Image (cartoon, rainbow, N blue to C red; front, side, top):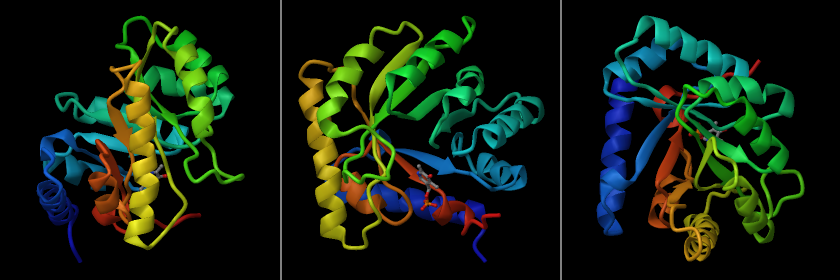
Length: 233
Ligand SMILES: *Cc1c(COP(=O)(O)O)cnc(C)c1O
C-alpha cells in the first residue's frame, strides 16, 4: 500500500511533468488535497509531507477538521477549501471557517456568506461553479448566466471573486475531457476582458487531472489519488 506521503510525491511529480508538456509553470497549479471522509490522521500525514491546502465537501465534517487542526497544529498555516454543495442554512459555518468556497452558484448564497463573514477574517475567496456539461441534475450555473452573477458578487465587500470552478460529467476519454475543460478556459478568458482579477480555474480530479491542467486549470482537487478510495456510509 502506498502511503499518503508517497502518493503526494507522485501527484506532484505528475503535475510537474504535465506542466512541462504544455509549457506551463508548475507553480501556477495548486494542488488541493480533497480529504472528505478521511480521518485527521491521514490529513496529518499530508501536512507532514508539506501539503497545506485541503478540500472538504461536507460542512460539519470540514469545520470539525478545521477546528481540530487549529488546536493541534496551530503553527501550520492551512488553507481550507469548501468544495461541496452548500445549502443556505449552512452558509454561516462556511463563512466563519473556510478560506475558499468553490461552489457558488446563486446570489442568495453569496449574500449570506458576505453578511456572515466575520470582520476579523480576510475576505472569503469565492469561485463561481459552472454547469459546463449543462446537465439538468448537476449544480452550477449555466455558462450564459455567469456574467450576471459576477456583477452581483463583485458588489459584496467581504467576498473576493477569484474565478470559476467546474465538475464536468464523468468521462474517460481524454479528448472529450479536454474539450469540456477548454470551454471553461474560454469562458474565463472571455470574462477576464472585463474582470481581469478573475484568474483561477478550479478543475481536475484524480481521473481527469491531465486534461484539466492542459486546458489551463490553476487548482486541481485530488482526493482518491492521495488518500485512497473513499467508503461512503
Ligand atoms: C470528491 C471530490 C473531488 C476529488 O475527487 P477524486 O476523484 O477522489 O480525486 C474533487 N472535487 C470535488 C468537488 C469532489 O467532490
